Each structure stands twice: as structure tokens, then as C-alpha cells.
Length: 178
Image 1 (cartoon, rainbow, N blue to C red):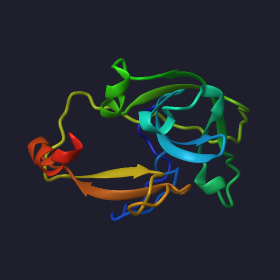
Image 2: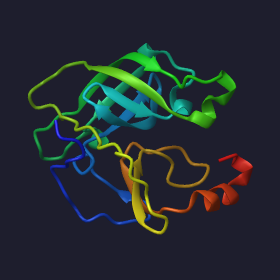
Image 3: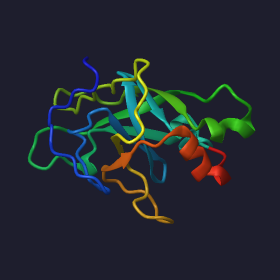
Image 4: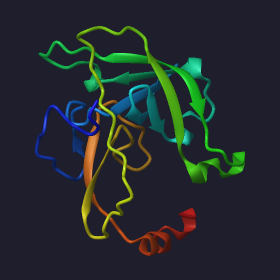
């Protein structure tokens, strides 16, 4: 597997627009027993990183992960969504009351029904020591809320955002203890 390679390269448009799982083949959507909760990122074939707050009160049997979800379909392609069961959950190695400040969790997953026509996720490329430069733009992608005080979406969204200096970020979001 080559990390971070997409089959479909399309022009990206900022300000929160629909994206395709084919553009971002490392993305996963995470469901709990009563609905969708969060996005996740494949970092290896059977490992996904997601936010701790998304699954903090769940057991592994309450979670289903899907790759290539594409709002439940791929339209006219023959690609089917790949489903995964969670076989292990690793929380941050910090005190319970500090976990939200270290808002990360690793899920180890196994394919439920591996089929030849199933979507094949590609792990994202992880940084190799380089630091982003303030002022550059980057892209954020996910299934989160698109408006304040709204619930998440089951459609993958993307937005272009500027990278800001750590000090500016800390000053701007002081009340959130960033």
C-alpha cells in the first residue's frame, strides 16, 4: 500500500463543500448502534485514528466502521462499501480527566465481509518531522457538523483553512485551554 494516494484527483473548493471518499481514500465513517458519530482516518490497513470524544462511552461491539461509504452508495460504480468490526480500542495513556485534552483514540479493525468489489482504503501519509508554515492553506475533511449547534453529516465534507501560528491559536482560543 502506498500512503496518501487517491484514485480521483479533483479540484478542491474551500468553505465546506461535499467531497468524495474516492478523493480521500483514507477516510472512514464511524457508526454506533443508533447512528453515525464521527469520521476516522486509516493510518494502516487495520488501524484507524479518531477522536476520543466520539467513542468515549462505547464498547467495541457498539461500533461499526465503513470505508468508501459515499453517502451509502457509489452511484454508477460497482464499488461497495467495506464494513469493519472493531476488535480493540486504545485510549490515550493519560488520566481520565485529561483525555479530552488528548482527544485521540486508535481503533484496530477487521473487515466484516471482504469482497473483491469492496472499497479498498489507503492509509494517509503521516508527517515525517516537517512543520506546517503559518499562512499556508491546508484542507480539513470529515463528517462533522457544518454549522454551529448542528449534528454531523453522513456526507464527507472538505474545507480549506489557513494554518496559524501556535501562539496566535493559543491566544485566540484561550478559554478552550488549547
